Length: 163
Image (tube, rainbow, N blue to C red; front, side, top):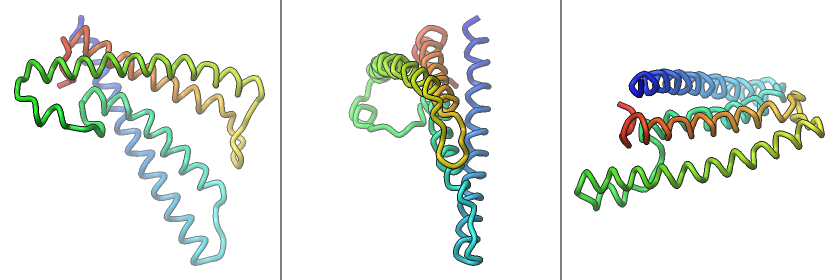
């Protein structure tokens, strides 16, 4: 059962990673096209800057689960380079995961307040008029995926990153 859960999460996180790559490509294309239009033709697409910003933000949050479960995120490697014992490294990895789980639980709790507040006030983005609560819901959902990934690492994968 644990291997099935890890397999499903791994496929989901890989799909999110690929979707993140797609969002980065679209964002890069729109930014380059907007720059060419502004400087070459004195016309631009004011909406493209907002789209690029939100794509990059969502890319960051959607890819966080994949990066964490694959242990590919930006981190300080002082423990991995100074500690020689694989057992101690695994313990450090698990402790780091537990601390991170707590932090993300707090972020989810705060995120629900933000979602509720922006829904009640009907706050929207500046140019595209997208309801902000939709964007915040995606972010909070990515936090939940992150927590699910770490719980799978701890309980289904016995503290090892996804292979």
